[in-house]
Image (cartoon, rainbow, N blue to C red; front, side, top):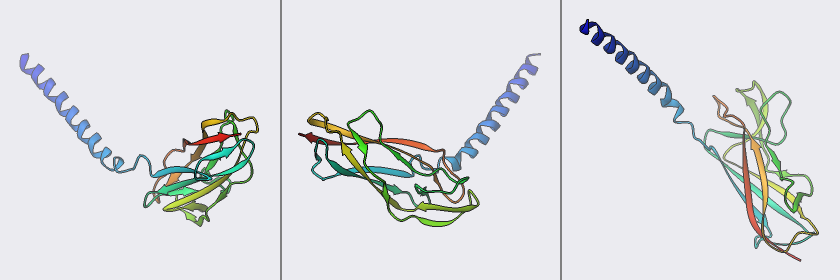
Length: 173
Protein backbone atom coordinates (compact mmCIF):
# COMPACT_ATOMS: atom_id res chain seq x y z
CA UNK A 1 0.00 0.00 0.00
CA UNK A 2 2.85 2.41 0.82
CA UNK A 3 4.39 1.59 -2.55
CA UNK A 4 1.16 2.68 -4.31
CA UNK A 5 1.24 6.08 -2.49
CA UNK A 6 4.82 6.70 -3.63
CA UNK A 7 3.87 5.93 -7.25
CA UNK A 8 0.96 8.39 -7.05
CA UNK A 9 3.29 11.12 -5.74
CA UNK A 10 5.78 10.43 -8.55
CA UNK A 11 3.00 10.80 -11.15
CA UNK A 12 1.97 14.18 -9.67
CA UNK A 13 5.59 15.37 -9.64
CA UNK A 14 5.97 14.33 -13.30
CA UNK A 15 2.75 16.15 -14.25
CA UNK A 16 3.92 19.28 -12.43
CA UNK A 17 7.32 19.18 -14.17
CA UNK A 18 5.69 18.78 -17.61
CA UNK A 19 3.36 21.74 -17.00
CA UNK A 20 6.18 23.87 -15.60
CA UNK A 21 8.36 23.14 -18.65
CA UNK A 22 5.49 23.87 -21.04
CA UNK A 23 4.79 27.19 -19.30
CA UNK A 24 8.47 28.12 -19.38
CA UNK A 25 8.77 27.29 -23.11
CA UNK A 26 5.65 29.28 -23.95
CA UNK A 27 6.86 32.26 -21.94
CA UNK A 28 10.19 32.40 -23.82
CA UNK A 29 9.04 34.47 -26.84
CA UNK A 30 6.68 36.58 -24.70
CA UNK A 31 9.55 37.83 -22.56
CA UNK A 32 11.12 39.28 -25.73
CA UNK A 33 8.24 41.74 -26.19
CA UNK A 34 9.35 45.11 -24.81
CA UNK A 35 7.19 46.50 -22.03
CA UNK A 36 7.51 50.01 -23.44
CA UNK A 37 8.24 50.08 -27.20
CA UNK A 38 7.24 53.78 -27.19
CA UNK A 39 9.18 56.21 -24.96
CA UNK A 40 7.58 59.64 -24.55
CA UNK A 41 9.17 62.97 -23.69
CA UNK A 42 7.71 66.47 -23.47
CA UNK A 43 9.15 69.98 -23.68
CA UNK A 44 7.55 73.38 -23.32
CA UNK A 45 8.36 76.37 -25.49
CA UNK A 46 9.68 78.86 -24.49
CA UNK A 47 12.50 76.57 -23.35
CA UNK A 48 13.04 78.53 -20.13
CA UNK A 49 9.61 77.35 -18.99
CA UNK A 50 8.48 80.91 -18.25
CA UNK A 51 4.83 81.49 -19.18
CA UNK A 52 2.78 84.62 -18.56
CA UNK A 53 -0.76 84.07 -17.23
CA UNK A 54 -3.28 84.39 -20.07
CA UNK A 55 -0.73 83.88 -22.86
CA UNK A 56 -0.22 81.09 -25.39
CA UNK A 57 2.75 78.75 -25.62
CA UNK A 58 3.44 75.35 -27.16
CA UNK A 59 4.21 71.87 -25.90
CA UNK A 60 6.13 69.41 -28.01
CA UNK A 61 5.60 65.69 -27.42
CA UNK A 62 8.19 63.32 -28.82
CA UNK A 63 7.79 59.58 -29.20
CA UNK A 64 10.88 57.40 -29.60
CA UNK A 65 9.75 54.14 -31.18
CA UNK A 66 11.69 50.88 -30.81
CA UNK A 67 12.88 49.18 -33.99
CA UNK A 68 10.23 46.97 -35.56
CA UNK A 69 7.33 48.76 -33.82
CA UNK A 70 5.08 51.56 -34.99
CA UNK A 71 2.78 54.15 -33.44
CA UNK A 72 -0.50 54.97 -35.15
CA UNK A 73 -1.17 58.55 -36.24
CA UNK A 74 -3.90 60.85 -34.94
CA UNK A 75 -6.02 60.30 -38.06
CA UNK A 76 -7.10 56.74 -38.87
CA UNK A 77 -9.86 55.17 -40.94
CA UNK A 78 -12.80 53.63 -39.10
CA UNK A 79 -12.42 49.94 -38.21
CA UNK A 80 -8.64 50.03 -37.97
CA UNK A 81 -6.14 50.61 -35.20
CA UNK A 82 -6.76 52.92 -32.28
CA UNK A 83 -5.40 56.34 -33.25
CA UNK A 84 -3.12 58.33 -30.98
CA UNK A 85 -5.14 60.73 -28.81
CA UNK A 86 -3.58 63.66 -26.97
CA UNK A 87 -5.70 65.31 -24.28
CA UNK A 88 -5.06 67.90 -21.63
CA UNK A 89 -6.74 67.10 -18.30
CA UNK A 90 -9.34 69.67 -17.30
CA UNK A 91 -8.11 70.08 -13.70
CA UNK A 92 -5.30 72.50 -14.53
CA UNK A 93 -4.82 76.17 -15.49
CA UNK A 94 -3.97 75.28 -19.09
CA UNK A 95 -6.06 74.29 -22.08
CA UNK A 96 -5.48 73.31 -25.68
CA UNK A 97 -5.65 76.42 -27.87
CA UNK A 98 -5.86 74.96 -31.39
CA UNK A 99 -5.20 71.93 -33.52
CA UNK A 100 -2.31 69.57 -32.91
CA UNK A 101 0.43 69.50 -35.54
CA UNK A 102 2.32 66.27 -36.08
CA UNK A 103 5.22 64.95 -38.08
CA UNK A 104 4.25 63.36 -41.39
CA UNK A 105 3.13 59.74 -40.89
CA UNK A 106 3.82 56.89 -43.29
CA UNK A 107 0.90 55.20 -45.02
CA UNK A 108 0.96 51.48 -45.85
CA UNK A 109 -1.03 48.26 -45.74
CA UNK A 110 -1.08 46.97 -42.17
CA UNK A 111 -1.17 43.16 -41.89
CA UNK A 112 -2.70 43.39 -38.39
CA UNK A 113 -5.82 45.15 -39.71
CA UNK A 114 -5.71 44.22 -43.42
CA UNK A 115 -6.14 47.88 -44.40
CA UNK A 116 -4.14 51.02 -45.13
CA UNK A 117 -3.06 52.79 -41.94
CA UNK A 118 -1.13 55.94 -41.01
CA UNK A 119 1.75 55.35 -38.62
CA UNK A 120 5.17 56.43 -37.40
CA UNK A 121 8.38 54.43 -37.18
CA UNK A 122 11.50 55.37 -35.18
CA UNK A 123 10.07 58.71 -33.94
CA UNK A 124 7.11 61.06 -34.02
CA UNK A 125 6.55 64.64 -32.86
CA UNK A 126 3.37 66.44 -31.89
CA UNK A 127 3.07 70.19 -31.21
CA UNK A 128 0.17 71.32 -29.03
CA UNK A 129 -0.81 75.00 -28.79
CA UNK A 130 -1.70 75.79 -25.17
CA UNK A 131 -3.19 78.79 -23.38
CA UNK A 132 -2.53 79.57 -19.74
CA UNK A 133 -5.60 80.72 -17.81
CA UNK A 134 -5.70 84.49 -17.27
CA UNK A 135 -6.24 83.88 -13.54
CA UNK A 136 -3.46 81.29 -13.20
CA UNK A 137 -1.57 81.79 -9.96
CA UNK A 138 2.02 82.96 -10.29
CA UNK A 139 4.72 80.48 -9.36
CA UNK A 140 6.02 77.02 -10.13
CA UNK A 141 3.55 74.52 -11.52
CA UNK A 142 3.36 71.86 -14.21
CA UNK A 143 1.34 71.34 -17.36
CA UNK A 144 -0.12 67.86 -17.84
CA UNK A 145 -0.91 65.90 -20.98
CA UNK A 146 -2.42 62.43 -21.37
CA UNK A 147 -1.55 60.37 -24.44
CA UNK A 148 -3.60 57.29 -25.40
CA UNK A 149 -2.13 55.11 -28.13
CA UNK A 150 -1.76 51.67 -29.63
CA UNK A 151 1.49 50.18 -30.87
CA UNK A 152 2.04 47.17 -33.09
CA UNK A 153 4.75 45.35 -34.96
CA UNK A 154 4.16 43.27 -38.10
CA UNK A 155 2.85 40.32 -36.09
CA UNK A 156 0.99 41.63 -33.06
CA UNK A 157 -0.49 44.64 -31.32
CA UNK A 158 -0.06 45.52 -27.68
CA UNK A 159 -3.17 46.58 -25.72
CA UNK A 160 -4.00 50.30 -25.94
CA UNK A 161 -2.25 52.35 -23.30
CA UNK A 162 -2.50 55.80 -21.73
CA UNK A 163 0.55 57.62 -20.39
CA UNK A 164 0.36 60.72 -18.23
CA UNK A 165 3.09 63.26 -18.89
CA UNK A 166 3.95 66.54 -17.23
CA UNK A 167 6.54 69.24 -17.59
CA UNK A 168 7.40 71.93 -15.04
CA UNK A 169 7.01 75.60 -15.82
CA UNK A 170 6.85 78.90 -14.05
CA UNK A 171 3.81 81.17 -14.41
CA UNK A 172 4.30 84.89 -13.95
CA UNK A 173 1.80 87.75 -13.95
